[in-house]
Image (tube, rainbow, N blue to C red; front, side, top):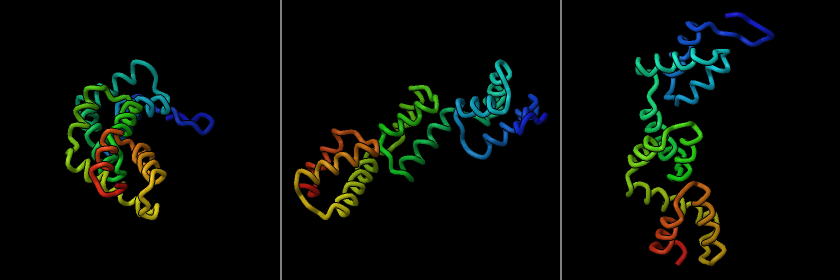
Length: 162
């Protein structure tokens, strides 16, 4: 490692070792690893070589990353599929892998989570059953990344706003 104005420049071997521990700590996308390598001062073909090494040695796996991302964002942050899909796109995950990962969400659990989110929001709004409250519920669910048709289905088939 050579230090240049408080910025460390890593050698190929040091960067490879750093990326092993970076990927072992938490699931990463290829784009996250690529960005990190660039910050470490690694350029061009060496980045691709390190990423290939990480994939071959199972440190890096896009499908595993997408699955972990979907699971975490849905179960912990309670995001909807639209917001999760957008997040995965920003991480550079291919569409086929995104679709497969999103299909892992149980539809019944998805509807229950959205219903729970709407009920909790309804409590904060004071249980009013008017159009203004319904709009606030819809906007809240949309901001969490849920699909409008599912939001309307739950609002119309539940006693939240009827």
